[in-house]
Image 1 (tube, rainbow, N blue to C red):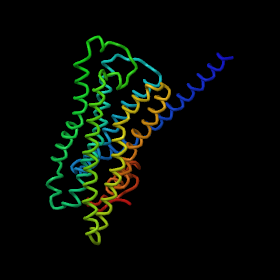
Image 2: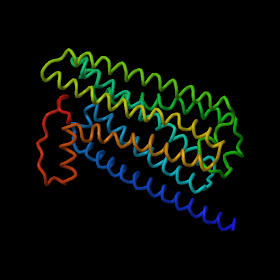
Image 3: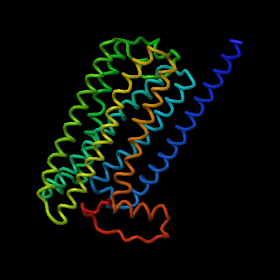
Image 4: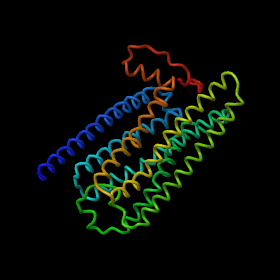
Length: 317
């Protein structure tokens, strides 16, 4: 009787796991398709890839596509307990860790761009040019790579050559050899959190002051820009919480493997997929210029849309 109960419990568990994995695949496929359409739209107009805000938007879309693919592969490997060699796991985990920082750092830069556009409009063309956008992308990846370099350099210094040939279930926790190594990574993540959160708050307060002082069309434009910053702040908060997920999961893993699996699944949906679905909403649908180009692209040109010259006050409510 006990054996039969164990078999039934095991079958229920497998069905639950399969259902969760299939649900994730549906969401990931949907978001990837949406992002691919948005990226295609971005490259269809010269105006988009010569304007800083759209260049940064495309950077987030590409980062989101990459992180969705890599983390989805890691999730599948973890759920079905597939083992791979440590060196291959290391490559995927490094890329995942890097682009976990790229999205929130890019969101912070986009918030600063909104701040310059609204609070320093006369200098916007100078500070937010195409050349400046390309420099920002390099800086974004440089800043995002610092936590990865610090964390994994400790692993490289501690691991022997035999470790790279071992077959294990791939996860970030496999590369933590010292307790203080995890504490150091936590400290760096919290430092980034404080800096980016402070930047968002600073921009919000400054734009709020301009919004109260503005009048007429300028007031409407400023309040729309403020709403964009608020959406950035919410998306950034979810991304930053994701930086804490590995520590939560590591603590839960000591309690039980199934609880670890469930917590990891929730974290992946809430703090990885949800922030990625907000990017198309903020710029893909709310921005009138991009929305018109997107509609024309999706409908393959059958619907003729008038592509107006760009202005910062053309944001959809």
